[in-house]
Image (cartoon, rainbow, N blue to C red):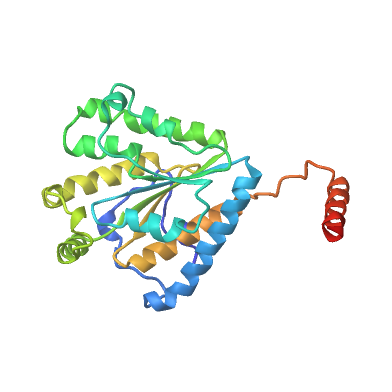
Length: 280
């Protein structure tokens, strides 16, 4: 299944989240059936991340956005934990600090974008400034409405510099969100994640959906596409995202860098050292 084509938001397309089934699971009926495929794609991601690091001519930025409890942390934990931390970073964007708020809204995001050879995951991102800022009226419409163009220009700059960008909206239903909130309440190991805003933000669900839909419509481009990932089933979410990332890394045509030393001379020294070791 070409999830990269099935779930992508085509540039200029309208987004109607109500028409997309968050419980969709494709041809896989269960976690058990999907698990071997997830493992295959995660292993491929790990392999290609090592090649990306060695190639050092491109980079990958993964953006995760969603309503509360949709699984952003789960994606980071399950899909990226196998990657070498030397070349992989997860960044969580929370309320701007005093220093961040003193700059333009893209400043803090640009500081965290990947260098060549790196993978960076944005757990929430610069899109908070057209989502939370819009829903909570933190800035006027005349301000946030201009940010879509600035975001597109920012992402174009990254793309021109060799950064591939994948943006995932994790799509869950209100009922699934409430079920996950209950799981947190019932699990002492996860109760720390509960906050007052979990329930107050639910009251703003329609406003958030409208904000997400417009953000994706305005900023899904060929070089920085959005994907709407059905996420009621955590295993299907992981399957779809891992496949898209693996396919994208393959499309980057990464190559092992050329050898920069005289291999003949290195071999000679190796054999010399090996011979000295034997004599000792």
